[in-house]
Every structure is written in C-alpha cells, then in structure tokens.
Image 1 (cartoon, rainbow, N blue to C red):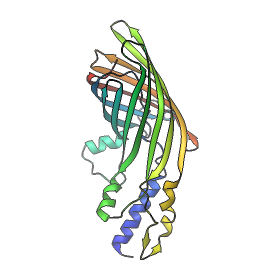
Image 2: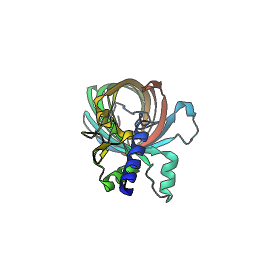
Image 3: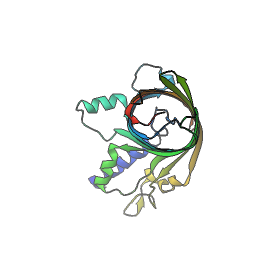
Image 4: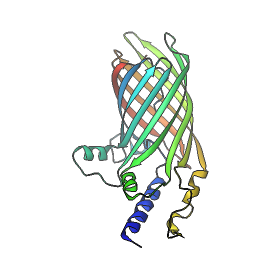
Length: 260
C-alpha cells in the first residue's frame, strides 16, 4: 500500500468516525425561529450548550454568528457555528487542524398569518445544515472523490406573540419541527484499492439510503431595542438519535429593521 493510499484511508476513516457523532447541527445550539420579523438586515451572535452542562461556559459551549434578511413575509438566515473555546484559539493564532469542525446552516421562513399591527404571527420554515471540517480540504487535495456527509433538514412551524411594554415590546415564540437526518454525497460504490474492497469502508455507498426522523420543539423570547439592537434567548428540546438532548442559547443582534 503506497503512502498516498495509507493517508487516504486514514483521512476517510477519520471522517466517517467523526460523522457518526455529528448528529446535532449546529451542535449545542437552539434553532431560533421567531416568526415576528419585518423587512430589514441583521447580524447575529449567539452562544449555547447542552443544559446538562449547566450555565457556565465549558468545553461544550458553542458559538455561532450569522446574518438574516427579511423582505415582508419572507425571512432568510445563514449561520456558521463551532466550539467556543476552539474559536478563541483559532482567533489567537492557533494553527488549524484536520479535526477542526464548523457547522454551516441556512433557514428560510414564510409568515403565513399575522405580522404588522397584529400581536400574533405564524410562520412555516425549512432549512438545512452540514458540518464543514478541516478534513474536507484534505479530501480535495488527495482527490478522494465522494464521501458521506451527515446533513439535517428541519421543517416546522412557529407561533409568536408580541407583548407591548410601553416604549418597547417583548416577542415570545414557540415552534415545533421534524428533523430529517441523513447522509448525502455517498459514492456510487465502496472505496477499493486495485479492485479490492477496503474492510473499513464496506457499505458506505449505502449510507445515503436511510433517513432518520426526530421531533424537536423550542421556545424563546426576543427583546428589540429601538429597532436597532435586540437580545434573544431560547430553549430547545427533543431527540437526537435515540437520546433526548436539550440546549439553551442566548445572543444579540444589530441591524436595520428585521424585528417587530
């Protein structure tokens, strides 16, 4: 077995071992789906973690940043999240490694009722998320072709209530969603060397055949301040695989419009 082949096998093994654990995306972060939004552009930053880790920042804390754009009843948002401690290390000049993991997500919402002067709002939403790792670059450099990537596709509805508070207002919301989790980008056949199957990878071409479905729900609150700033918090609960996992998250945003 050549050195290139040994490296290729090692990289693929690492990817598959990691993907099996990456069932929550963005891992440790609630899905914020407040349906009370208005035309505008906002920049968000949030931190979150599993509730079992407590309220202090730990090695399980994650951070995400993103942008949301709303045009009337249509809302679009994109986020990028990673481990909070690792993000600080990279920001301070630590060299990236193959094990570094980031999760990209996108969400689209359509308000179907309420909004404007109404205190109630109802929206439907759908999205997708997937991990992006340091190993992805290695796969491209080694020309390894396709390999399975785990993706999540949440689809649900959210109900929001505006509570007037004199000069401002508090928006509370709740949402339920089905999360469809499945592998994508599977190769047409299992990796092989000179036509001989590699034992570690037998069967990976069929990873994309199955889809896991889980129900999750979330509740949250947003407090707009002068339509420029906003702070928000959410609690997210439900199953990931066979386990019940709960998250909390808090964050803030700044922008023009985008909140009601």
